[in-house]
Image (tube, rainbow, N blue to C red):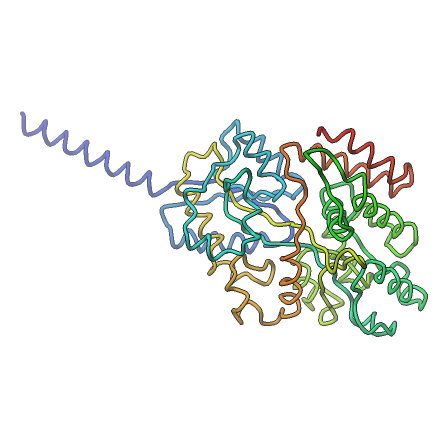
Length: 411
């Protein structure tokens, strides 16, 4: 009788171990990404497939939303324990840290990571001296231009200042080559803030001083005045006030813009002859500067991957993040987003075929200007988006619009 009881106990123990092993073999994590720009959905799925092949004990459920829905989806899912890994913009660590959305992973970051990643990339994931993830998409906006159109207009080199950009656009317009040579993403969305920030950096402006709004003065005001003047001059495509970055890409690669401000990803997409009418004709340089104030301009548009505080599987989530941000993975997909790793820029596999872009990146990535770091960024951005839109529509002056935005920023 005792033997049979022991056998039953042993059997139960073995069954328990089997169930335990089976459970660990099916650890599932949920990851939230955006469905536009930088790495494509197909690329993220391919990267993830490589991860699960190397880690068969972990399954990754992927979800993709447009950039505009990324923030709210992340925050709203916290209550239901929705995601283990989330993609986040450089503008959100302050808010996410203050509201306990992301795990502080400072202790997980190795010395090799600290030494190998470009110093500027770390600012993407840091707030108040702590790291809330790994930088993943290292990005800024560049000035893209159509070489063929510039050549037809007799323009020998792309513009080095924003004033020169207008002058060249006027030549192109006057010669009847294009009706509206410039395309921007000025829809009432974060896209417009990125273009505005690029110009604020060129004009030497400040978003905040001593924690209070200062964009209504100096370079911040000059930047908005430049946008309005460009729009009213007829040099800018009038639909720019409704465009997001993907709209700008489509207009540019259709040959309907001589100049466009956009992220890294547009370079190789617009150079694809299957989808683009301007493949092989694309030039790219850092966004211009302002005489006497700057030589180039750039916005920090980088993004990171973080582990949420709601995650039940933080170790597996971090393992996935380190794979996705590894140098091997990033180098393999460098045609849509340049790597965060310093030594990658000396790797022919990364630079081949996009030498012009890498050359521009070396200048632009060193000049990236940050949008303000504040837990109230969302309120500030919304107020500025409205100010830009009202100014473009002419319903108010840039001075009054920015003063109103400062009053409504929550700061």
